[in-house]
Picture 1 (cartoon, one colour):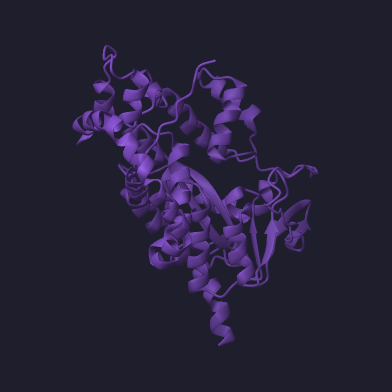
Picture 2 (cartoon, helix red, strand yellow; picture 1 turned 30 degrees about the horizontal axis):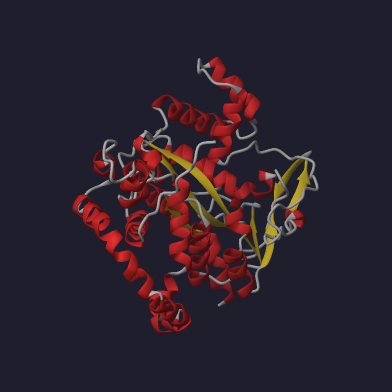
Length: 394
């Protein structure tokens, strides 16, 4: 069995990558290629960084917590001093090579003919994984991205299509793809057919994530054999969801919160990573601008079932509702907005970069909320309908 080597990154290096993720307008795919790090590793660093950010404002507490550990480390100085002589040669060699070098150049420094230091030890001193000597980053080919872009278009045009229909559509258009890969790409993009399924009782793998019942059945009505949704007042039901948006350089994710009665978009954010902070940030923003709703509905994704999101809802006394397993139609109000956004903005505009994409989404949401008539609310403007409830109450 081949021995696996774990690459050790410094805290400063991790911080640099995370800050660039938070501040830049590059996708995770671009950062992954730039630093030759997997997207999953970058996401884990971001989560660790955010969870420990509060320490920066409580240095005294941190020092107190680690005082015992510091004392223990001091007691080890004698032993470290004994090992210093052996380490001096290795240190001087490594420091002379490392200054100002990136990973690509570090790989070039490894000398297979050096007898005093093994290749494994050289890699350790250079702070690179030995596998990096042979690894070439695999970036998604333009052909595969073209397939995923087409899947997005087919699904948006036919939200009732499952992977079999999309697979058949791709074959008909001449794409060389199998059913399993079609299903895999749809899973990566977070899309599935919008049609009712019989609910199944399934075990919850992560017992710390409670799945809440769906509370919106009373708002569904049947008329002429079809079902429709009616919520009588603003701020009675909010719902949140995330959608995938394709770009020339990778994937971006748009999270949004909508009011079911008025169809107003109350908060939204475009991000290069789909994690808990994406949904909690827009929820906190919405609650600072508007009164808390009676019910908040979402799917069963880990971003919504995690403690960070649940605790915010509970602190504001909001009832928690979640779609049935495999029932995207339970959140159809948001699904319809995402479809409208893609058809009326994303698909018809060639955005050159993420900045233009953000600006385009900002302009469209402003138009959708404040200038566009909506047929389901009597050809009124969503934000006018939403705010009218509070004007009447005043």
